Amino acid sequence: MSRTYTDMKMALGQVGYVADDSLAMALHLALALGRPLLLEGPAGVGKTEVAKAMAAHLQTRLIRLQCYEGLDASHAIYEWNYQRQLLAIRSEGTGEEALFSDKYLLKRPLLEAISQDTPPVLLIDEIDRADEEFEAYLLEILSDFQITIPEIGTITARSRPVVILTANGTRDLSDALRRRCLYSYVDYPDRDTELAILRARGPQIEPRLARQIVGTVQALRREELEKKPGIAEMLDWAAALAGLGINDLTEDRVSLQATLVCLLKTAADRDAAPPEVLDRIIGKVA
Image 1 (cartoon, rainbow, N blue to C red):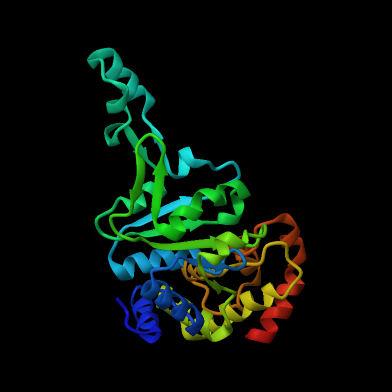
Image 2: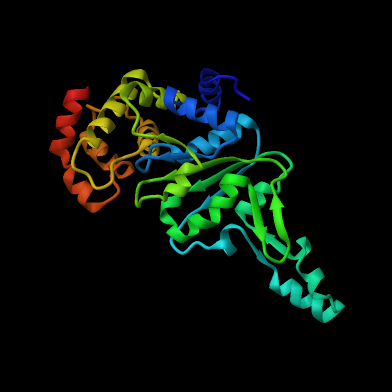
């Protein structure tokens, strides 16, 4: 385990994730204090990748709960295997007490995470997409790392998972949830950080082209777009340009304009970035 936040920053870099000082400190403290970490910020800035990088750094399992509207305990925590219970009643005459045992329990991500002998990384992704009522299910886990199942009782974590929650700001989260977590805001990276990310993920990209790519993407984010291109889109675009053999954004503007499918994901955004806008941006970054 990293001893300081600078150790954490270096460790994440070794698994391909470029973290700034603020995020590295938040992750270091989350590990040191055994507290969940809430990462908030716009979509596409690498919040989910933080959990993947932490799992790689700690060499442990990543357990992911993808949140969505209508998510409930049966999909997030546990449910009973009713078919198997019914078969047991018919074939073996199993009594009620035996039916409600671990043998017939289907563990969903939250229960699975606290049932591991080796602490996993538990990613609760896009918590703000779930209903407010679902947050209540999380409070016991986030504060005491235990789950109460009425038919069995309270199950305490065998080992405390590293918990990372992400939110895109689609709705306000409850104060109760926020109090149980450390917090870090993850924004779009600055130019130097995004260049470092591109160097780490695309070492085959020539330095001049890398600077042009990052400069263009950062300029596009300043345009009036519905969905600003994130880091993943930037990396996809870089890979597409490399695959097409484009080594300079000032060459072959027709092909270059076509590759914007990697960056612009709505019809309105495509209309907002016609060739003349791309020409203007490239003229400044080239």
